[in-house]
Length: 246
Length: 253
Image 1 (cartoon, rainbow over the protein chains, first blue to last red):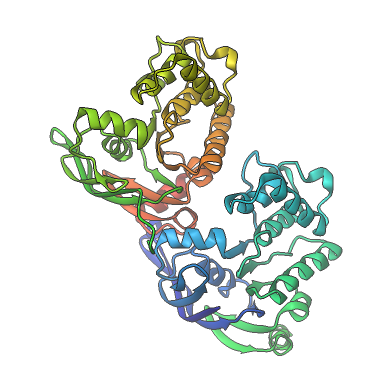
Image 2: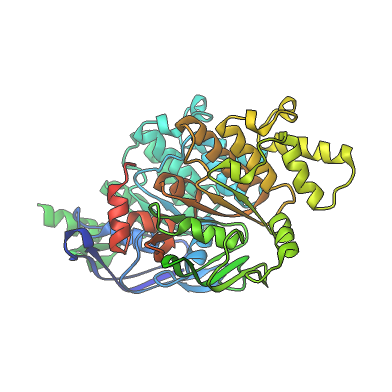
């Protein structure tokens, strides 16, 4: 579904005299339908940068990321035209970031239903699906029609995750999607992600807790200093990171 | 893009006022149903671009194709038709888009008459429908536009611009002269109308918050030129150009 080869990202800070900050030096990976690749590494190693380059939240500096689109055939996410990226982000690729940009003055269930509405689903049906998903993630019903701008971090995260999952995406990019959730809700979120992957989605995820990696990842990749340094099954890679920390 | 024709295609657009160049070599596309943002400081040329597209200002060079038709050479009649059926405009200053000495209903009727609507009853009911879409109550239809508040005037401009359901709306700083809470209501309305009708939009604003809320793709203009374009989120999170980096770093939100 997605094959990343030699991905690079260097930030140029013009306000600091053009200082160059290399964030990704060389990352390659591939993920097939039904797979969830967990990306591990110390903070600042480039995990989030990798995900943001794949979602084109950041503009990659080099390399390629060949994605098998249902609509456009093979698309290199590094160089795809902006309108194609917008269309993929709306229809095929779901991004769950750690921090939700809370759309002002839009109730939670509508935030979640919006991708369905854009896809032409009738308003009542879309809202019902959104509410069912929010309930599955243990968001109290009294919050379904409230504004996420007033929500706690964990509540926002649930809205964020529900919005990403509501359209049955083909590729999931998950940047710490469960970091602010309590254990019970985290379990529900993990099951939701696992179901989506079992249903044929491909996923790449960064998770702050290693038990999530062991529970739901099908493989793992270790990043250090912007380079992929090891890949393998989740238990092996988790053991490696723990050995490094010890 | 892959198989989809652009609704609007601007190539090498240049406009000079005397010796001053307002915009130079500006190129971009707008695809059906999308919202394109144009951001930049005052004097960056962003409104000039919109005025040229709306044929309020004549381009000195370049091409503007709207729904496949080159429009830079359109004569007066054709221009009037284009402005009714192909594009609508919402000005920052409502007085430019409305006749303030005429009723709200009359402002809309003018657009319908231009489209050869002749039946008074139908014009009236269509006007009421359009105003309802922008959340103006039916009992205000006969009030003079001059009696409308700033926010209501923007609603009226939106209704007028959409009277003949053109596929493209041009919005020039649509909320910049409004109080904050009215701004929010108008932005919500613009989003709502976009969601309901799928009309493509070009939104010009100096306010990154407006651009973030509305636009999927964004052009950044500086000193008359496009210095950067990209997916809105990328322009805001990973700006490439020195000016955009300064703009984003200087923004409050």
